[in-house]
Image 1 (tube, rainbow, N blue to C red):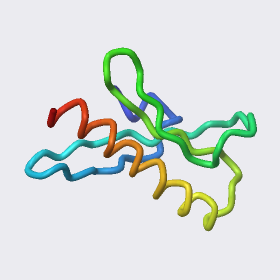
Image 2 (cartoon, helix red, strand yellow; image 1 turned 180 degrees about the vertical axis):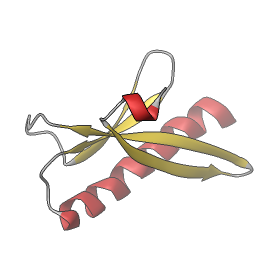
Image 3 (cartoon, helix red, strand yellow; image 1 turned 90 degrees about the horizontal axis):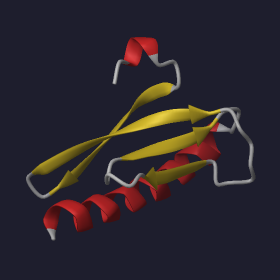
Length: 82
């Protein structure tokens, strides 16, 4: 992934799973589909991304990111540690 060429990547969340660290990209979603402000989505290969809705308040994003990061931790725990 080339961050400089991909304007939708706004950062990363690092999740610690024991001695393993997983960096999950955070991408900006311009679509307002009624989905949560932030959500974790995994693809068929097992990789994942957290989508954050553009225009949401900082307070809403912070709360939703906590839930999305927890979902990501569960996903990667199952994938990597089991």
